[in-house]
Amino acid sequence: MSYKTVLAVTGVGDDDNDIRLAAGLAGEIGAHLSVFVVALAAPPPMGAYASVISEAWLDERKTEEAALAARADALKALLASLDVSSDVVPDFAEEAASDDRIGRRARYADITVVGPTLLSRGVLRTRTIDGLLFNSGRPMLLAPEGTTPTLKPQRVQIAWDGHIEASRAVREALPLLVTASDVRLVLVDPVADEFDHGDEPGADAATFLARHGVPVTVDRIPSGGSSVPHVLRSHALDMGAELTVMGAYGHSRLRERIFGGVTHTMLTEPTIPLLMAR
Image (cartoon, rainbow, N blue to C red; front, side):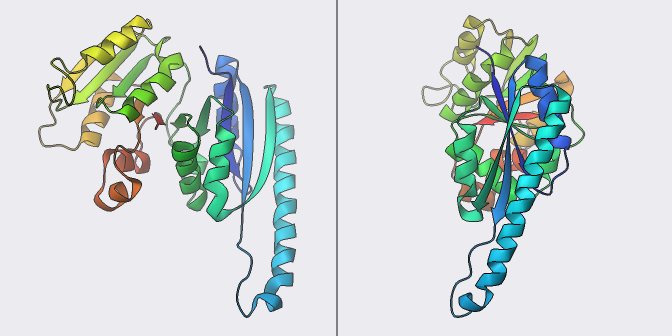
């Protein structure tokens, strides 16, 4: 099993850096690159003033649609020059529905790359990540600024907590894990009982990975009072990890955003490439 289609999401006003990054990753594994160009449409005017401003709104919409078409044409020319199998799909989406549309598009790819330009955006970044995690059923690869992502990592850290989200992320990451040389299954403060990790925390997950030919080692790490994200980042640095694999949102999004959580922290402050699935 291997990734055959890589998806990249970009906005109309974005630079080409994310697309060049995604093209390089697709070329690295001989995959097809699909680019989804999203323009977020302003909502139609409502209320008593709608009739007065509707003409201006329509003119603005036509301008935005023309800019979207021009951006799509420019990306097609760029990808042709990069000699990568590719397609470009433009989409003019109402903001409230954009996460669903991005998620639906991602269902037809094996993995979606979220590059540093998109990660620096506000609304489109949030809509893209929400759409990928909650509406696609596919993994995403976050590539923060200053990192060198690869779809052939040799050193990989798996954040394992025994939950279904972590299991899903591991399953989606298998095409990367089987070609790695050092995979660490990292458990922070694991509890050995029937409700969490069993009698030997990490053993069952390691056996599953080993049967797939993954060179896995179980690292059980005490937090020592530090947060789980801090422990994971420190461990990734110590082992020279090129990628962290983890599940997303074991708790509700609202709870994570209000009270904080591992997913929220790792998403808002990524330090190395992060493969995440839910």
